[in-house]
Each structure stands twice: as structure tokens, then as C-alpha cells.
Image (cartoon, rainbow, N blue to C red; front, side, top):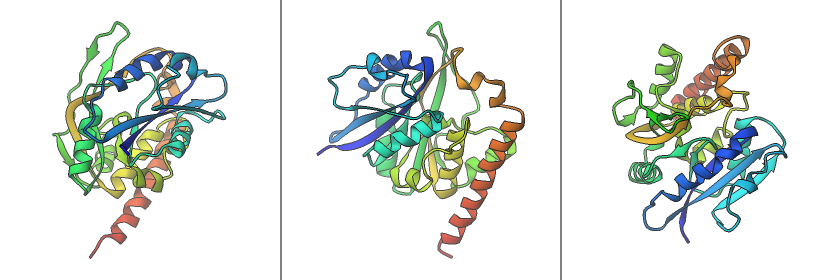
Length: 251
């Protein structure tokens, strides 16, 4: 029986139309011998109709629907249906770069002390071109707690949480993604960072699509009362987890 990496994808609103591109990027992945992926697609509400955009004859695709709760609740519901030892996030409007899953697996399989991986991201523009950015950390180990320290100093994550691949037991321990209207993936990143060291992969792992329907275009995403509340809760939870993890470490 093959080992499985679970790819979890929430789908809402107009983003369902991008599913064929996300699927094509999954089909281009070449995994090590003995490995396969399962794709847990979670419809956020009953009116998404993801099945109309994806083939019905690929047993690796597992589609389900849940009551509308936002993308992070949908991700967590997808996690509940997943079976893999590793959990990889992929938004419905994004695409994995060739080799992304194999690189994630190589790091996690070869480094038992690493709990999670992230990778380089390029923006995928509406005309099909891509834009890269400076400011990534050096490839390699991200010491436990370093992502939180960077976030506190710069008010933004050092690495992109849309590229996360993590050990299943850590994601389950954290309860999946934080049930927030936005930034739940940043909350997961900070939780993982509190519990274990990560790894940054310098190769491009994700093409992050830019389009008008993104939740990140909402003005409340990056400022205002709701933003302040989200950031405060993410910070408080991370600080509690850091204290708990420190107490559990051998003296």
C-alpha cells in the first residue's frame, strides 16, 4: 500500500473555475517510489459544484461539502477526511510548481526533527506571467520559534503559509487551521513554529494566483478592528504554545 501525502483544498465562490489548473499541477508532480497523493477538496457551502470542474474517474480526488464557514474551516474539514502522514495545503486558485511535493517529502522523510516545510512563491498574474520577490530566508532549517520572532518584528510572516506541508500529528494537535475569517493559515504557521523547527525550500513551490476575487483584496484583510483582533489571537495562542513547548523540552 502506498504512503500518502494529503493535499487539502477549500473551494468557495468563483474560485472553483480554477480547479482544473490546480489539478493539472498535481498531475505533474513526480513522487518518490511508494508514494502517492490524495486531494481532499472541500466545498465551502452547498453551491460550489466542484465536481463540474474535475474528472470523475480519478480515485485520488475526494470531494465533499460542508456548511459555509470560510476557507479555514473548510481546510479543517478537508483535514478530517484526509489519511496521509503529511498534510499539504493548496488553494483552489493556486498551482504547485513541478517537484514541489517531492521536495517537501524529501525534507520531512530525511529530517525527523523537522515538523513542517515552506517554499519560495511567485505571483501568477492574470496574463500568465509570474513575478518573484526578494526577502526569502536562506534555504534550510528554520529554528523553532524563529517564524514567530520574525512575524512580531515585521508584522508579516517571513515565509508564505500557503506553501505549508506538515506532519499530520502536529496539524491535528493544533486543531487544523484557526477558525478565523482570514489569516487562519498564518495562525497555523505560528502554531507549527511554536512546536517544531521548520525548513525553507529555496526552489519555487507555488504559483500564487492574483485575481480580483481573492479574499485578500478585502480591505479588512490587512487593517482595521477585525485585523487587530485576528493578530492578537494568533499572537496569544502562539505565546501560550511556546510556553507549553518550552516546559515540555528536556532540561
